[in-house]
Image (cartoon, rainbow, N blue to C red; front, side, top):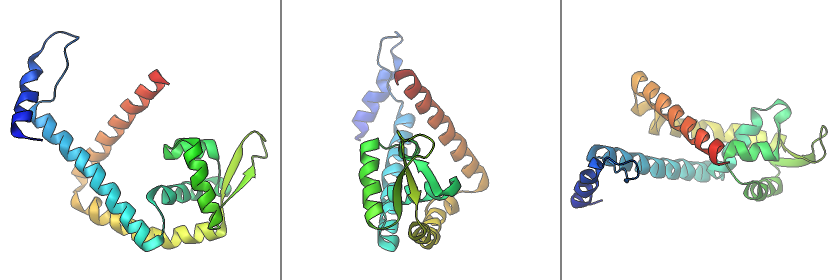
Length: 174
């Protein structure tokens, strides 16, 4: 964003009426741009590492990891969709791809046949275990090692507050 655009955005912060548009200050705009760049670059870097080292997309890894943390490595597909922040139809296609690779299987939920469970197979678990060290190394190198304990705690606190606001907004609009 150009300096003149930043100055114009900052100049518009003085409107006092409740219906007036709130604009970012110059400092807020710079922080926001850094955050958006971070989100894009980090997700791309993690995706690249997982594709290169484990032939998994980030969301595929996240699904396998999420299933590995569940009792019997099992979760309803609808719950897995919420966990991964994916639409059920998109997640269903992803589960189909993982199923073709032998990493996941589907079964009707024995407690309620209206639901389908995704179950991590032994092959899927073994693939996840093999992929995890490289992924953790990337997370450590790119994020954790760049921050001291105070900065990491502040980042976690900030992320949790933003997540809470997003969840609150979803609850209101949902």
